[in-house]
Image 1 (spheres, one colour):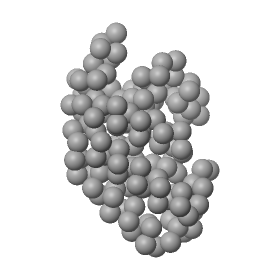
Image 2 (spheres, rainbow, N blue to C red; image 1 turned 90 degrees about the vertical axis):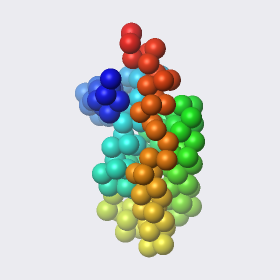
Image 3 (cartoon, rainbow, N blue to C red; image 1 turned 45 degrees about the vertical axis):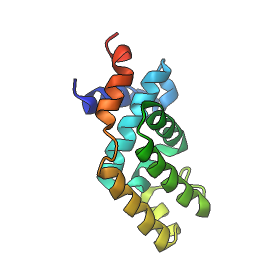
Image 4 (cartoon, rainbow, N blue to C red; image 1 turned 30 degrees about the vertical axis):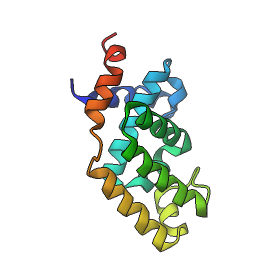
Amino acid sequence: MDWFNITGEFHKRTFKHDGKLESLPEEWQRELAALWRVEADVNNGAYLQFIANWGRDSYRYASQVLKTIGASRMARIIDQCQAFVEEHLDPEGLKFEQLRALLPEEVVDRVYDLSYEFMDYPDDIAELGLRHYGPFIGR
């Protein structure tokens, strides 16, 4: 099973509903979609891209799920990123360029440093995720 494709499938199912996680009928499906979002966006444009594209709801799901599956280091990284951002502004509804412009440079730099730590995959999300969600995915 390809983890990224599995999680991406649930993310795609939200497209007809403006990307809303609550459009997915099962909690575990929302969790998988949030995992795809955090992985894809942090790897593509760092944490600021993730929070700008998907908002606090996806952050909450991603943080909770990373902790649930045992990816505590990656959960800590996104929790720190979110805390740095929220220390200076409410990111909800802001676009990526707005976040970069409104946040102090040292905060942006720190969030990027943490994003690179995330990209190093200190936890094996695919292995941990498949172990936890395997019984749900096989339905």
